[in-house]
Image 1 (cartoon, rainbow, N blue to C red):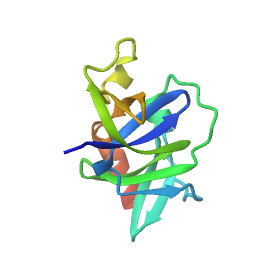
Image 2 (cartoon, rainbow, N blue to C red; image 1 turned 30 degrees about the vertical axis):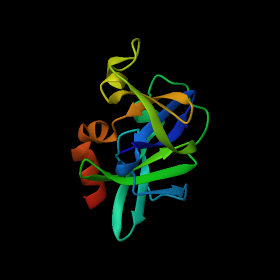
Image 3 (spheres, one colour; image 1 turned 30 degrees about the horizontal axis):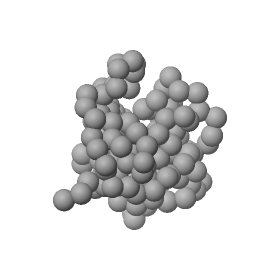
Length: 150
């Protein structure tokens, strides 16, 4: 059985997330404010009767990367049971995984390396495989409080 990823770009980083983590891809839309939220939470989105925290993938996953583009797409899903939305500048498509590379590539900052599931070759290019569930688990309490409106 083939593994599929959603390929996206954040700054110069080509990344991917497993398609089973992503429920839908939406164009960026105006967000509700999220006062007091951590800097990587750029707002709240009401979707299907739920309020979801919108996480800027660049600010959260790649804090050392200089990112000039604003997010243009929203990747909604329940990542490890945590309903949330990732905002990314560019979605490149859904690709078959041609090969997996583990461990995480050398030379990455520890904070970034700890949320990666290795790397994959997909769509003809190497991509870091973002483990969105692991990334959001660290932020579970903040995300749940924001979504509850407390």
